[in-house]
Length: 117
Image (tube, rainbow, N blue to C red):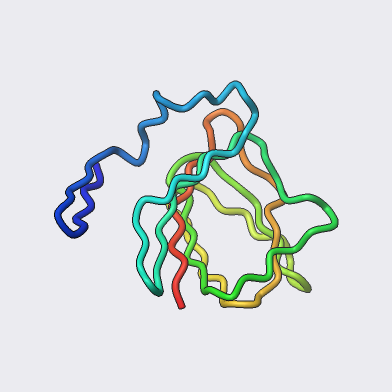
């Protein structure tokens, strides 16, 4: 269960609850759970989606990523591929080029991602 407090608003949900998500559409689901000036928290639900082979993420923010369910593989430019399973986390510094090369389908890969400056 996650409870978020924002000014005059309390929001509650469960990070593992995917019942309201149509996973059969073969689309990655990105939900912004909370954000502020220098911080954004997202839940991402992937079912086999990967980064296009000719694209690299090169973000201006640091990225803390953890796999809550399933597994995934991330390739950081110039480094060996990293395999993340349930409970694993990775800190990706700003401007560290990377891409997702694998996400599990069953179970769906559920990520919790924190972007920060």
